[in-house]
Every structure is written in C-alpha cells, then in structure tokens.
Length: 204
Image (tube, rainbow, N blue to C red):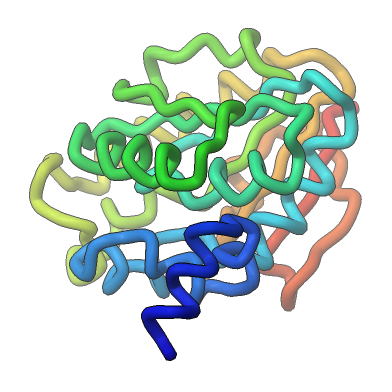
C-alpha cells in the first residue's frame, strides 16, 4: 500500500506538497534527517510564497537555499513567478536540481555561489531562513563543507543588511527565524505568523 501511495504521488506531484512528511520523501535519507532544523517547512514556504508571489513575473530570491525546499514549494504554488535559490554548497545545489527534475518544475532555479556575490537588484522580493545561524552554533552544522566562525556570521549579516537597504520601495521580504537586527529600519513589519517565527516585511 505504501509503494502504491508513493507511485500515485509521483504521477500527481501535488501530493508531495501536502506536508513535510510527504515532501521529504523526495530527498535521500541523509538530507531528510536535516529537515526539521535546516529546511523550510512546507506550510511556511506556502505562506511566504503567498506574500512574495502576488505579482505575476516576480523574481524571488531565497538567500541560502539549501536543498531548495522553499523554492520548490513556492514554485509549485505560484507558477507565474520565478524562484531562485543561492547556495554555496555544491552538493546541496545538486540535490535541489535533482528534486526539481522529479517535480518537473520549470520556474525554480538554483545558483551555486555565495550570496555576497549576488546582485540583489536583479530580484523583486526575498526569502531568508537565517542561513547564517549555523556559524553561531557548532552543534547544528549542516556539514563540514564550509568553514564556520562568528566572524562569518557578522560579515554575512552586515552584507545582507547593506544589500537589503539599497533595494527599491515596495520590496517584500520574508524572514523565518530571522533577527530584527538583520533587517534595515526602512522595512516595515506587516505581519508575524506561526508564533512570530515567520515575519513579513515591506520596504517603505
């Protein structure tokens, strides 16, 4: 029966977006084991997509996209928007690309690079699930593929702040487990959802 259900979901990809239990089956076990701490929950991704993807043709950037869970969920629910994930770990980008092919999504794209090298003005709106935090907590590292230090946390936070500050009025930002200090004062908090873990911002 379980194999039959999985087969049905593969025939009807929307079944994977029911909840995290269903979606995480798309990933290999090692990636799946990191989901609870490091990958955006399906319900959070869909809520953020509703806020960010209100205009057809919008280009939305996920800052530190990991295995692409936010972009893939958002791309499914907002087919008229384009979702881009920037991720510095090559093996996570490759995993995101494989999962994208399984879901046959044509509006999700993944970039292997550091977010410091990205021109934020190429995008309309942004999603950020505090991807810098693992630099502060050694016990929650995704892996040892990158060097971790509090210096990197401070550098990335400052860079993010400066990039967000230069964007045009009306830019939308979703932060999940983000810190208020990472968001410039020019952004107005519109709403806080899920016990204030997901915050919705608009640049004034």
